[in-house]
Length: 234
Image (cartoon, rainbow, N blue to C red):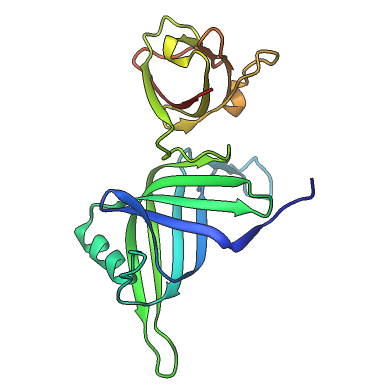
């Protein structure tokens, strides 16, 4: 299969508003920023070049621009005025960014955002434009398994570890299902249904034995640690 790119028109931003994910009207550009600050670790004996190490936390945001409209009565899409209202209310919004490549492979990016700042630009002789930055708060979830975790076919399952499991969770709910998403301590883990391989905790990869209903993380679970799954029936 030839390499397939994601066309700009196929980066689709939706924000949860009034209980459902809605399109933002007339968006012409979406930019995703993810930054992991590096702390300096240089010492007098470390040489002439500065050394650095990740700080342990990452920050993310989405910049979105487009044409200003005042209302969209037909498709009920959000406008830049709606974004300003939500910015002032300060409750934040759930975000879903959908990416589709030329082979129709789909990735979903989720998170909670606070709009700030929002600009509206009006110049004589030109159409009105807006620019909004959606500041991310908490986990940025990236699901490239071609399944929307907001689908009604998807079921949630939360597990709280006792600390006695070792690195393996076993539960009847996980039997004969397809695990499509796993969040362990605010980190996304890939879960593969292939018992021919071993789990790789360094790369946050776990192994799901569908017949046994078990997930092997390859490292001990801490007492009270919570693991969230989303799964679909086979």
